[in-house]
Amino acid sequence: MKVNKENIVQDLIKYIEKEEQDFQGSRMTDESKVTKTEIVNRILAELEKEMNNED
Image (tube, rainbow, N blue to C red):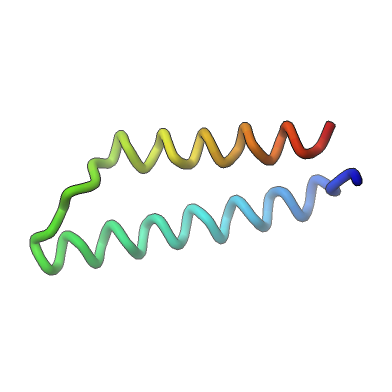
């Protein structure tokens, strides 16, 4: 099943927003175990997964 590009974009936006909220929450509680680099790598992995599902 092909996923339309608009759905991919919306899913990625939601994923990025969730990661940002989690990161901000961990910073506020001083539990910043996840680095920005790790978040970017997760986002890129999610993008790759979505792109593979598109094929």
